[in-house]
Length: 213
Image (cartoon, rainbow, N blue to C red; front, side, top):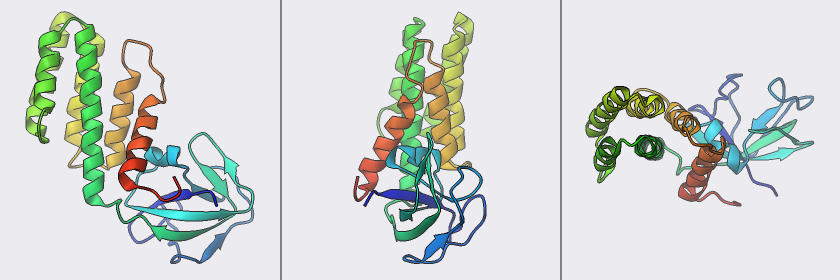
């Protein structure tokens, strides 16, 4: 059986339809699967970073499974088991890893712009245990250095880093993950636009030790 996954709000509530899912083993059915309009939407492992929410469940799908770039849709599904490893602590850990990735993109852009000192400053701030205040201060210094040098992209990416740190305690972890994606896509060197999402999916699969993956 192919493994599929579904993120839900607390209490097994779907994010858009606000449908309260029954407990594991009970089938839910709709007339047909039409992406973004009707059907049971679920994730493959690569889709996980796009749909982060409070609870993660393994689901079984039945009927014709329609694939789209970031999800699958089927007419029937049932919850199998909750992935208990995905919790508030794991979400915070993942969020910080996305901050680290954003800092790495910013430091690389600074170095490419010839701004070695602020790049090293960022790397130093990221060394050791998470220190949001130090990272924010280093990010602000990097923005100022980039603006003084006319290095627009380096300034943008340093700003993304400050935004990512600020979002950690107040915004859903999906917002922090998205900031990391935006930072990767704003590098001045050509990059694979989906590489950051692949990295995020790989981290989640490994860290959650998902069955069947």
